[in-house]
Length: 502
Ligand code: 6LW
Image (cartoon, rainbow, N blue to C red; front, side, top):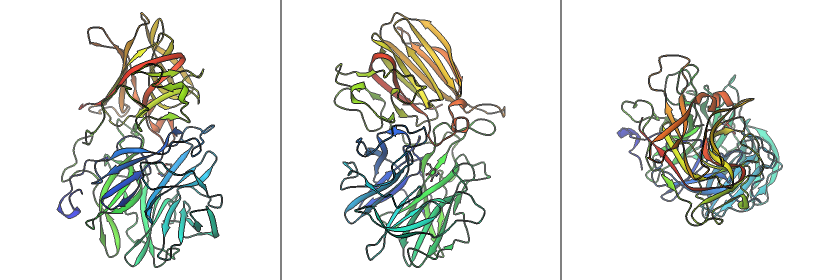
C-alpha cells in the first residue's frame, strides 16, 4: 500500500501515464485491478494489476476477440467508453458502452487477465458510463450518465422495471456522468463526474439510505476539481473509489497534463491518477494527487517500469500494442520472418480508417522511439498518431526516407532524402518546451529522423507538437506511437520506446 493519507503521501502520479482515461478499479483480496476506456482501438479495454495502487502492470485487454468487440465503422474517439470493473460473488464483472453500434455490454471472467466471456447485451440500458452495484438481497443496480438507474439481471441483460432519474448533479453543471454506486457503512454513495471532461471537470457525490435514493448532495461538492487553478494536473474527474485491505480509501480518476503557452495543450490524452481519501462527517474528502510536501517541477516523476525493447521474438504481441478498429492477423504477423514483425498494407494510408498500424501509447512527455525497418517489399515506417487527421510519420520506401505531416485537412511531405532501400533505423523524439516565455509556445516538439551507420542521429524535421494534441484534434484519446505499412509488406526487426529525463 502507499503510505497512509495522514502520514504524508509519496505517490508518483500519474499512476498509469498515457492515454488511459475513465479508470475503474476494484480489489480482490490483496490484488487491485483497473480498467480504462480504449475508444476505436483493438484490442479493447486494457486491464491492469497492482498490489499497491501505484505500480500497475497491464495483464491483458478484456475485449480481444472479434465476437466481443466490433469497431468496423467506428469513428476516432467512438467505440468503447468508460468501463466499470467490479469483483462480486467470486467473479469479475465488466460493463462498458460501445457507442459505435452495440450499446451497453457486460462481460465476466474468473481471471481478470482473461479470457473474458462473450458479451451479454443490455438493450434496455440506455446511456453511457454504466455502473454495476449489488445490494444485500443480490439485486443488481445499473446506473448510467444522466444520472438514471435500472435494476438488471446481469446474467441475461434483461432490465427489471423502468429506468428512473436518481440525480442530476449540481444545478447548472453540465454532463452529470460516470456514476459509481457504493454501499459504505450506513449509506449508499453515488459518485459522479460533472462539468464536462475538459478544464471544468469535477467529481461530486451524494448519499442516500437505499441504492435507489433519494440522494442528498454533499455540501462540499465538488469533492475533486482543479478547475481555475494552475495545478499541473487539469481536467480531473471521472473517479472511482476503492478500499485497501488496511481500511484506507483511495480514488483513481482521470486528469491531463497540459503544457506550453495559452490555452495549454495536452498530448498524452487523459491519464490515470491516484489520490488518498479520508472520511469527514460521512463524506469523502479527496487528498492531494501530487507528491507532497512540494509538487515537483513538471514533468512529474513517475515509475520507470517501462519495457524498452520489443524485438518481436516469440508468439504474439504484448497487450500494450493496439491497432485502430481491428488487427487482421494476416496483415500483422511475427510468423512471416522469424524475429520480425511483418506489416502488410491494406491499400490505405494513415489518413484512412483501415490502415495497417500497430502502436503503443506515448506515456511520457519526453520520449524516444526507434525501429529498424526493412522496406524492400513496400513502404512504411514510424508514426505518432492522434487520429486519421492528425499524425506525423517518417516513412521508408525503396528509394527514399520522408517525413509526412497530416494536420486537419492539410497533408504535406515536409522533408525527404534519398536512400539505398536497405534496412534503416527510423526515430522520433518528443521534447517538452522548457521555459515557456511566449504564450504562443506549443507543448513540445516532435523530431523525426534516421540513424546513420556511425550511430549518429540525423533529424529530418522537427514539428510543433500542438497539432497532435487533444486541444487541436478534439476527442478523447491521446498519442499512440507505432509502426505502419502504406504499400506492400514491410518488416520491422525491433521497436524501442524510451522515456528520458529532459
Ligand atoms: C466518458 C465520460 C467522460 O464516457 O468522457 O470524462 C467520456 N468522462 O464519462 C469518454 O471518455
